[in-house]
Amino acid sequence: MTASTVEDASTLDARTPAPLLRVVNLQKSYATPQGPLPVLHGVDLSLAAGATLALMGESGSGKSTLLHLVGALDHADGGNIFLDGVDIARLSENDRAALRRQTIGVVFQQFNLIASLTVAENLAFQARLAGRLDPAWQARLTHRLGLEALVARYPEQLSGGQQQRVAVGRALAVRPKLLLADEPTGNLDEAAGDAVMALTLELVAETGCAFLMVTHSARLAARLQRRETLEAGALARS
Image (cartoon, rainbow, N blue to C red):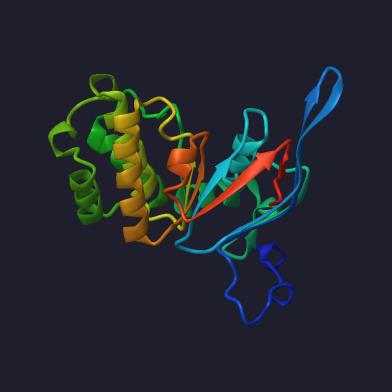
């Protein structure tokens, strides 16, 4: 990581702590047979360490695209994403991979557990990759998520709610600075979704990480500290 990847402190108000996440004029288009399809149009967004933000909007508004860009899972066409002062766009592929392993936790709607690994092994997977496996923290996560009786099971032996709890634990096992979630309760019934969300918010508060969640649910969004809405690739202005 070079000095050019670090955000210039002079661009920020010296009296205000720099946000953990700062998105500046973010732009993204996808190629189609009819030509480029713009998805994001100059999005600006910030999130402080320890803060929680729900990103809402209709299907096709660019919510998941924004989340994938912030998570270093895709490349923007223009603008900047500063995470802990580092410009993601200027990182090499190796540094982007290291950022995903060590700094960012991601929870997807589809769980994305590894079918050949047990619950215990899935929980430890990202932490092992990052060289941050902490047995005491893993044991605490297992207990807090109500998975102690399930550690020897495989994903196919779990309910949807249980699988999503494993996914949350896996993402938090590295103690990330930023947790991203893309419709994390979208495949769950209301009761299971509420339980997963309650546990996630408790653990986010305990770890002190920032939390950015994409959701269609105004009811779930109301549980987070802030809410923003994407409309046709731009943040709605109140």
